Length: 120
Image (cartoon, rainbow, N blue to C red):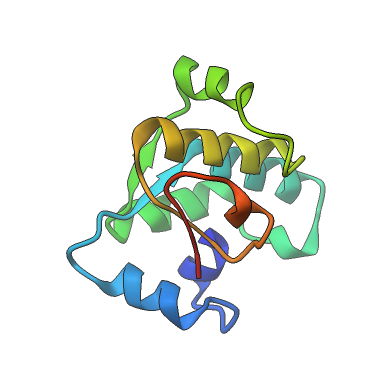
């Protein structure tokens, strides 16, 4: 969803657009997302055609706050039920739970996790 947000993709759900544009919401992105983009961009995956440095710069310029990956985030992954197997998504879920921040997702599997996860 992060790439959809910065590219203005028509895939970004209207509910997400409304939340992103709401000045009362703090916009946060995870370093884990930049790491995932770097890996997949480096492999030449077509849906990850934006260089990770450019994605990060765009997010910061547009008022997003960068959330680093901490030890407690990594440890929290262990306690997640095995609903989703993608390690990047599992880390984002653990970060949302640990930090008490809402994770927006269009993924129905991610939305099955308890905690501050919102399907849009």
